[in-house]
Length: 381
Image (cartoon, rainbow, N blue to C red):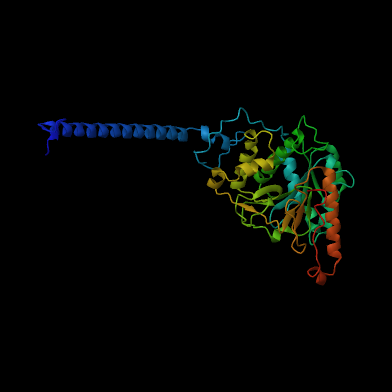
């Protein structure tokens, strides 16, 4: 040990011990300081963990995922969902007591006997006027390749009296009169208008009822043209398949932009719970239609937890104006999506029908060697 020097250069006896003592106390203070910080961090983590545990044990995080209009609770949902406050109310659309009886009667008359499937669309008066989208929709089945017989299994949800009468006047269709007290759906339900939103959510409620009654279904918008039988491309052992606005070349990637205009759904506990969840989710996304809400929830942990599998249909077969299917040799359906307004849809859908007729008029041996594609979208961009 070396003595410290004074200002005049002489040694100061004992200064070395003093400095060594100071160094010791500083080290000791630092140790106490770090120990205190560690204790505080540990306490914070304990408090945070305890809070999360309490929330996990409460009903709050999962209230949204229960169908509050039903006593059914088919799954134990994960209890760690985003902190969305519960809605003030989940309003159930008025439904006559005998609705399920009448609906099942209609479904029973239309069901495909070999696979218990029905095809469903919905209409109001504005879509069923003479020379309307509905006429083109029906015509597409008649001129399609092996699709005419599918009209025998088509159920039309008629949202007003005029649409119901127009449906009944068409041959081979099964018509169901949708009643919604206090709502008049007869006029054109402009995109994202209040009536439009009410109609879309009423549709989701009715489709859930179809699943609860034990029927599989293909839901199709009336502006989807059917040119080939879709069952050749459906995955019949799955839960739900739907078309896309844009397809990213991976059928099970939930990043695909779902378009509910063409949806194939199997009746099982998973899909029933999805439709309950979907319908109730409208309360959390006010002003959004069913398709927007589905795109928001399709990747939710709940959907994964219940084991439900989404599959998305390739636009090469199930195309639309957003992403047209170019090869008419492969086309199954063509949808007037990315297009707003009945008159705009009518214009381009009429061109689609003409394109298809020209294609079908070609000798089958020449179709592959001839440049065949759509002349649309034209007005719908």
